[in-house]
Amino acid sequence: MKNNLYILVNQVVRAKYSLGLPCKELENTYLEGLGVVFELGCSSIGYVNYLQYFALGILLETDKAEMERLVKKADEDKLDDLIFDFLVSSYGLKRSMASSKYQKEKPYKLLTEIIELSFHDKDASAKKLKEYMQVKWLRGHADYGWVNAHKEAGYVGLWSFEAAAVAKILCLDDCKLENDNHYPYDLAHYKNNKELVITPIKESKERFEPDMYEFGIAESKELEQIIPVQFHKLINQLLLDYRELEDQRFWKKYNLDDIWFTIEEYRMDKRNEELLGQIIVNVLVNSGYILQLDYKENVEDFMDDIIDFWKTKEVKIVTFDLMNDQYYYAKIPQDSNLKRIYEIELIDIN
Image (cartoon, rainbow, N blue to C red; front, side, top):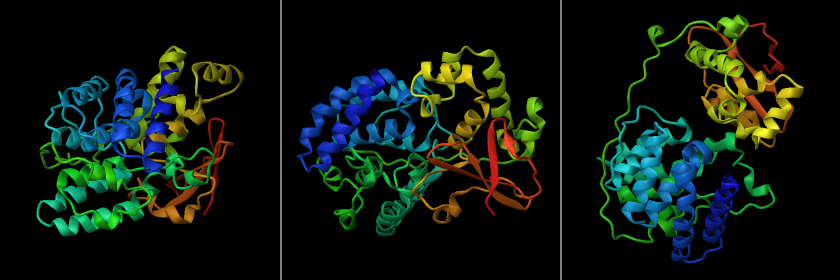
C-alpha cells in the first residue's frame, strides 16, 4: 500500500512540473511524500527514486532537518553510492558511512566527470553536462524502459532532478538545457538561498584481482561457463538463500518486486514452476552484468552498454528468454555451450 502511495506522489510531482505549474506548487507535495519515502527507504522504492527524491529536495531547498531524515534512512539501508554521498555533503550533511561504489554506473558515473571537470574548467563541465543530458542520461536508464516511456499511456514526464542538483551545486551555466525535455531548468534556478558545499568525489579504485573473489559455483558448476567470477559469491549466496530463507525475506532481499509485485504473486509462481533462472537473470541485471532493454529498443544502439567481463577470452552475445516484453543481453565466452540457466533459455544472437 505504501509503495503505491509513493508511486502516486512521484507521479504527482512529475506531472505538476511537466504541466508548467510554479515550482512552489511542488513544495507541499514533496514534504507530504517525504514521510512515505522515509518510512519505505531506498530498499523499497529503489535507488534511482531515492536519489532523485533527495536531489529534488536540494532543488527546492528543503529544510536541512527534513533532508537529514533521508540521510539517516539511507545509512540504515546501507546505501553505498558515491553520487548520493556527493549530494549529501553538498547540503552540509554527513553520513555515518563512506561509500565505495556507484549503485548504477550508467549513467551516474559520468556525473563524476562533470563534477571533477568543474574544479578547473567550468565551461567544459557545462558542455559535458549538456552532452550527458542529451545523449547519456536517458540511455543510461534503458533497463528501466525510460527510452520509450513517452509512448506509454499515463506518461507524466521524466526529469533528471539529480543532474539539475549537480548543476546547481557546481554553479554551472546550463542555459543550453533550458528547453531540454528531461532537464528541469526552472527548478535548477528556483532558489538560491542556501550555501552549498562542493566536495570532490573520492572513488575507490576497484581492482579485479583473483583474491577479491570467490571462485566456483558449487551447486551449479555449469553456470561458471557464463557467469564471471566477480559474481560467483553473489550467485552462491542466492542459491543458498533460495533454499533456506523464508519466502518473504528472500523476496525482499533480492528486490523481487521488480518481477512479482506482491509476495503472494511470488509464492504462487514458486509453487507452480521453477523460478531460479528468472531470479538469477534479475539479480545479474541489477549487478550490471546483463543489460535489460525494452522490446521497442534496438540492441544495435546499445552495444557499448553490454559490458565484457571476460578480459582474456573471445566473447559472443546471447539473450535470455524470460518470455516477457523485455530483452536481456550479456557477453559470454565464445566457447560456452550452455543452453539454459535453469528454466531460462539462452539464445546466441551473433
